[in-house]
Image (cartoon, rainbow, N blue to C red; front, side, top):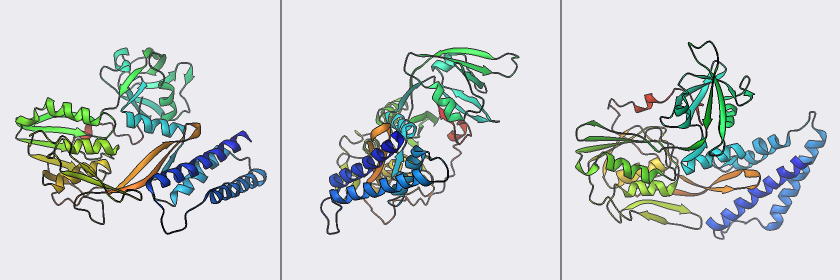
Length: 382
């Protein structure tokens, strides 16, 4: 019954969060607006259905699974594909992505032959300093054997508060006996800027893989590193960048536009038109710009590329982008769960019916920085 009550509280939390966000982003409209009685009636109906299923279903009921994977996602599914509910683990990972850091040992792990292997320890991270290498098979974390555990479960064992110690036992090719490493966990940054280099003298290259709370600072440092003001050209590679925080997208676009130029407009029910302008501007740095995108470039990426395209600031090269012209507001709920609810849409200056960026210049440059990443779809950073 405790799980039942927790599930009902969660459903009520999602309903209230949706109602509150709707109140913030939505003024009175002519259509019928749900009252408090309507919400109470909906909760009562849900409680009756849950109680009936709990009492009569042919097999024992996992209430958390019914709530987390059934009731709440089912309710959000009728809204749009991007409004999502996050269970505690998913919400923690979302917050890590947004903050641009997490606490762990600093390596990427992935599945291989039903085992979890080390794909790459980050240079200078605790795992790297302890002597863990790419290809090591993780056999045990502290006293917990990894046989039968998923990669995500092993990754969770590697996480922990800063300064705590974890013992990692690995199998390594060429060594007859397992090796055990003592690793002290630390803060591990999730970098938005993956690669900064000059492809040739005068031609800079910056790979931007996400938009989190550190993106604008990382990009500013990257521009200094390549001395952008002195370049003949700059390539900003955002292929495969799924987006992230709206304010970071605005800050990144601000670095390339003239002061007071419109970056994007934000349309919600309570805000018919909320424009975002370049506040600081490019400070006179007008290096010729090429932006690389592809079909997996979305959301905040499209805001930046769209602003560059709108003001003829640079050339967009690659493929038609994903087309996610929505803004999600993230709300923390009870039980360490969370809700990402679509509360607005955004539009570039040259607004169209589609948020997709139509690219007419095919990608022909011999650039493959993604190849440096391990080819595992479900790799995990820890």
